[in-house]
Length: 342
Length: 252
Image (cartoon, rainbow over all chains, first blue to last red; front, side, top):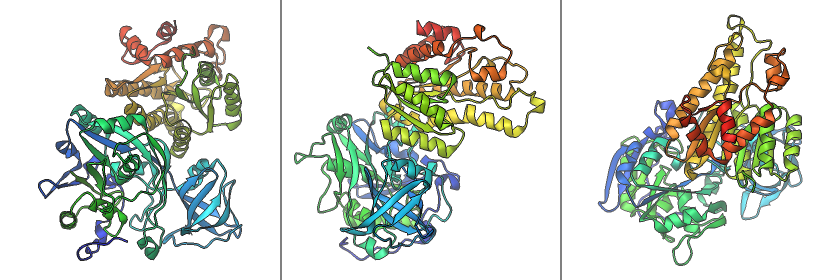
């Protein structure tokens, strides 16, 4: 549970939830707004994402998550013929831990029966039972060709604030590589190659890792409020470990990068090449020891995202930043504006 | 030592003709392969042949003209291999045959040729170049044609698309300068393939190059992309464009 030290944050005005990609608003991906939280000066500044280079320089290392998003809302049919949507949160060889929801809005949870066989095209998925520690997730037996299944029968996971379908391509970062994320690692979405090249020319180093995201919601407000931790697959390679060691300042593009780097750090605080599963939660109780600065999107304060931010920014300053973001009409969520914490 | 040991190549249109020959040549030289074509049967047959020298091969039945198929191709390839070092944009269509005059060509058919021969190579490059840029290395080879440069009656849609592809390659080359990633157009010349027979059924096959011989030039290109870039410059050719004769020089 998140324990805020002050009064609850006011609810977000619904109009500030970005309903679609910036391109639909006539903006290029890198033309969204940028809220800058300058901890040293205890200041909040308002600018454009394109000006990111003003806040970074030689000695800085920008670390991006190259996980490619999957169309993880998979159309499946029950033996009865009833259509539903499976949302794999965790994919292992031969096994999914997936949410089972209605085939259309409001995508409410559907109760499956252990032993029943679901079909997606020619693929079969067998229901084993509920996952004991996260009972809204169903454990399903799937074939090893499950990536093909998802790619052929899935659509991007979409929440109620995005009323019209959005093409998968619109969710990808410009460097998306190894597929596996159920939802977009959206902090990196605004980065264009034009900007990455300018940053490199300005002496900013670039490194990459992979962390595949799970689901940000289980389609049940009460259940979501319990903040069940689940594991995510990540890969930090030796080149990135070396780059982190050499960097003066490590700037994580997204909370996924924070989780991956912090999970790769040993007791000595040094990052080593690591692959595996992590359910590490960064927050005031477990502050970062590797990551110095953070580029992230704007997410609603009730989410565990806010807890992570509190590990980087004193709460009064964070609250001020959020209040100014609302006042200035910043847009929230995966297609919205960005925040830089330096 | 095999020339392409440790390299990952994605070849489109790999089930026959030049694409098939390139796939086999790359496999013999130790490359790991992702092969794409529309028809699963013929594609699997080529994949099996590529596996016999021990190559790791992923076969993906996909139509490069369709965005969803391209996403599946890219996603499955990157899942299997983690990266692509060499992209060979070879899949191509003539459009309707016997080749009609432009005045008789259906605009829908024209668009389809452009989708396969120009849009698909752009979209696949765009999807894979990010990884190449992060690693600071990579090669994109766009298969061109004499029809890109000369105007032959009947070749309208194909010519337009291939000329466009050459233009695209030139801009990629300009934008990628200094990044370690190379883009070239390679014009293999007239070859004894099904496509050539469909276009020019009366041509004597003995006068045509064999795809297997042309494929060797592609191996050399893939093995030493910087040579490709230099070769294109040195020959005072239009930027980033290698013609059959210069391709053979690269191969020797």
